[in-house]
Amino acid sequence: MKFAKGAGLAVWLSLGLLVSALSGCGSWQDEPDPTEHARQAFEVPSKANKISTPALIDAFRSEPSTDYHLGDGDQITLEVIGRPEVSGQQVIGPDGQITLPVAGNVLLRDLSREQAAAAVTRTLSRYYKDVAVTLRVDKYASNRLIILGRVENPGVVEFDTSPTLLEILAKAGGLPLLRPEQVLTRCSIVRGDKIIWIDLKRLLNGDMSLNLTLQRNDVVYIPDAFDTSIFVLGAVGKPGAYRLTPQMSFLDALGQAGGPTVDASAASLHIIRPSKNQNLRIDFEDLLKPDPNLNVAMQEGDILYVARSDIAKVGYILQKVSPFSQIMSISAIASGL
Image (cartoon, rainbow, N blue to C red; front, side, top):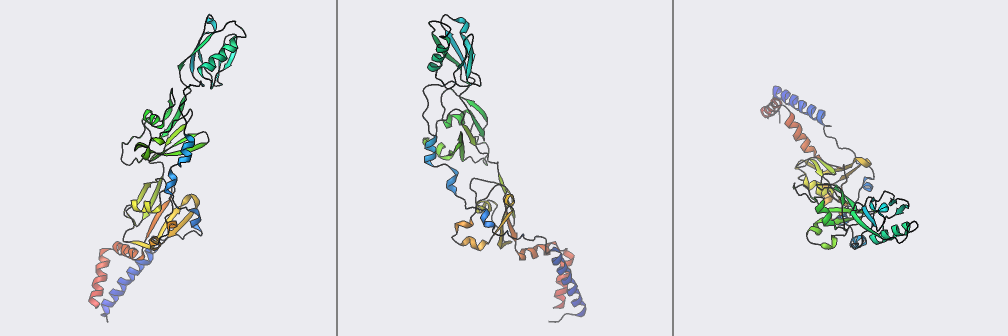
């Protein structure tokens, strides 16, 4: 194949411009090198771990108490027959005690009404004869727990008798399904140094075995749907930030982002974990193998990056070349054929 002298010069000039454009843009989207032994920083998601086992839930189960036990902040009224000077209203202090005229301090924390009345009687008997005491609770201030997270009214909830989980959620305005993206799947109950996770979907579908009786000072927490995010970038259908759900895998994230586009490289999917300075590269062809270890779990702040193939890069650069240059190149090549 021979070109006319003038046409050949135009062809080589056009090709030279194209090569210069390609070489100048060749590093426009370089892939980072994978980190050595990066897989050690990742773990396989276990969907079953998002709720506690029945054994752990049973350990939290408690029967409602028939006797109320006094606590800090409770307001009580003492009636001592024939002794108005020591009768009247009292507030149990943060040390669990009340202070009586003449008799002094009396510890009432964690006592029932009958036990508290007996304690007051013993204390006053050192100073008075034939003491008869009755005790009335005017305000139950010590029976309280805390609810946090995705509820309308987070904070302290006071109660007279031991409430159930559903009763507390109702009092706090729980489960506000006002927006479709608020996917509420679980809640935690913290009791001292122990914690369990309850499957709210099962509870709301009628599994009353999960409607546990709560205790004083329990903490109920419902995770917010927007607490954590991960990022999907590169050659995907819908790149952007996505809400991190419990035990979310990278395939879940890739699917929510619309999957890889036709421009994606078959061997260049990167999971970058900035918190651990790790970069894991996965080959798309390996995903067709029955290896569950490839579907690693995502964590808050992870970046899922799908690189473009070399052919896609060339197509991208050609789109950026000016129309005049494209027409000149095509016409010059055509005239020399």
